[in-house]
Image 1: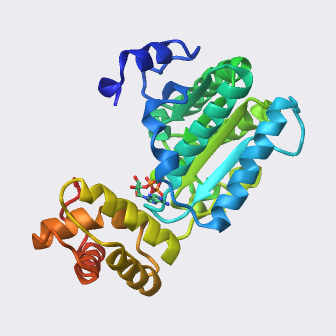
Image 2 (image 1 turned 30 degrees about the horizontal axis):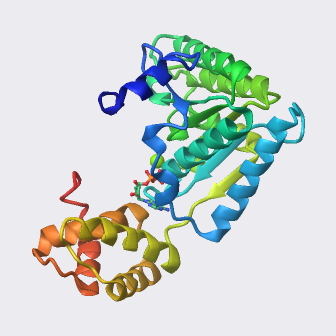
Image 3 (image 1 turned 90 degrees about the vertical axis):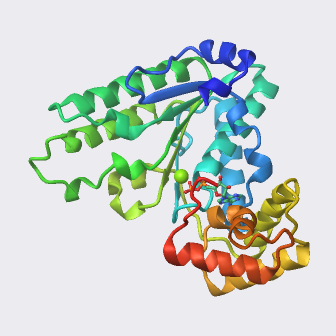
Length: 307
Ligand SMILES: Nc1ncnc2c1ncn2[C@@H]1O[C@H](COP(=O)(O)OP(=O)(O)O)[C@@H](O)[C@H]1O
Ligand SMILES: [Mg+2]
């Protein structure tokens, strides 16, 4: 991604106060950023997710504007659910939205910190906890200056349920999780900070962390309206490559896939027209082509992962 950034974006990234860490655990950028530019427009959420999410963001912004260190919010949001349903997209879209609002209202530049948990893990005793503390020191430095949105993908890779860890775990993750909780508690009172964590495995995450979240949103697999919107978007993109799927076929396919097979992900739907074209060679795709391709993708894994 870094190679694709324009010079203006690179200049802004250097200017955000915190720097990318050498171990790859922290990546920083100014908000709004190019990377997230299209997310809001592309994201399709069912009302049961969109409503609480929008209200949460509004409350968080109000808390920051009024500078309330204790208003019952701790600045931790968890997005949970199966793979490929838009959790990572949502985290980016929220960061972007907040960055835009901040720029408009406060005239300042917000910061996005992407925390890569696997990069914090070390098998040197005590080192993981030290790295966690160092990462959060950088985050605190940023939050002392400006609105800072931290995204933590696949939280279960470090926020393990401590009860499941062996006592002689060489990576000493128990201490690392304790350190993470301590850091989150320290930053709870900072109205300038929002941490958005995503996970496919909520049950594996330490209860103490889940309890610290202001809101845990459970993302479902797409229902018919959500699935239709995601597939329609994919059809519009495919149209630019001369692959056609008319809206009736999109709707018929989504109705069959999202009603009958409740486990189809947005990720599969978003790639369906292109993969159906690759499989069949058809440039005018029908619902039955899309459904057959989706079934094959779900049954045997996807042979066209790079599409
Ligand atoms: N709700 C959604 N709205 C729009 N696109 C989606 C949605 N869910 C999944 N997708 C598609 O699937 C891809 C993967 O989504 P992502 O946010 O990484 O899923 P997750 O983090 O839940 O595994 C996205 O890039 C997008 O193309
Ligand atoms: Mg994800």
